Amino acid sequence: RAEEANSKPSADNLRSPICCIMGHVDTGKTKLLDCIRRTNVQEGEAGGITQQIGATYFPAENIRERTKELKEDATLRVPGLLVIDTPGHESFANLRSRGSGLCDIAILVVDIMHGLEPQTIESLNLLKMRNTNFIIALNKVDRLYGWKTCPDGPIVKTMKQQSNDVQNEFKMRVKDIINQFQMEGLNTELYYKNKKMGETLSIVPTSAISGEGVPDLLLLLVLWTQQKTMVERFMFSNRVQCTVLEIKVIEGLGTTIDVVLVNGVLHEKDQIVVCGMQGPIVTTIRALLTPHPMKELRIKGSYVHHKEIKAAQGIKITGQGLEHAIPGTALYVVGPDGDLDDAKEAAMEDMNSVMSRIDKSGEGVCVQ
Ligand code: GDP
Image (cartoon, rainbow, N blue to C red):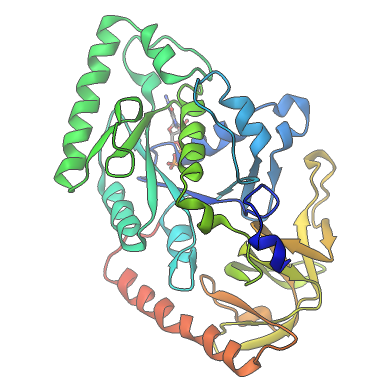
């Protein structure tokens, strides 16, 4: 596998970027995720979209299909995109990996009728703190008075079909919101007018109800991953990078941990170390589980067992002694030549940052 990581970048040796959805309550984060997921649901397998533990996987093929109306080249070099299922602050705050943000990119959802709201600012602060790139989805455009619906339409084409009144209201609201971002020290611009991507943040107008602008949003995510500087970030590596999201007791399985494997490979029977309330937890992976791909057939508590799983993926792990694992901390694998004490020490380093986060949230950070 080491040679693999050194060869030319391709979908085989790149991992999927991880995307998180942030924003104020009721701006449409959940709805937007549903809308992105919705494609071809009628066709059963939703165009290869698969439900993982805590995340949804969108294969490159599916994204290419949905962005084909847009002229840009939406060829994804990475195998797909992994979108975290629980939008909001808490999961983002927990989604850390070795001290930095686990999300490669975020979508910050802003309601076009409300502009920047308190939790928008909190999200902005978290994103700045973690140095996470983001795209702004200016959602609920369909609420502009007199909006003509154009289901799943690209935004420029949809805009052309709107009356002058709608276009004027849109321009006025966008201008106002750009000003609000300016007050937060951020340059923003509608993505199709943005000549300085990178310096200036892109705004994509969307409707999570009728899907306008959603192809544009997907396209921007793709364009972002295609930047040359990103290749290295998404190179598949053998070094396991994995974060614990949740601890859950599941009937028949006992205590399980839900994790996001950001990079590397996990195997059944791997010796792992996670940060625990009473010190490092050293255990062995008993089972690596993912949900059954066919939703209809999914019986409660029924999972697919894997001998090994390659990043990036959302996974459920069973093993002894995981009851006291702490969400938001890293999972370490002790390799055949690895040093257990080093792994234990590394695992407990996260304890400090988790504790300081809890202190900080006690000071009034609104966790959603
Ligand atoms: P969240 O709290 O940010 O996850 O927001 P939700 O996804 O739960 O949406 C909040 C409310 O706004 C729900 O009633 C949605 O139906 C509605 N909503 C979300 N997106 C849109 C949109 O694009 N247009 C309209 N008209 N309503 C929306």
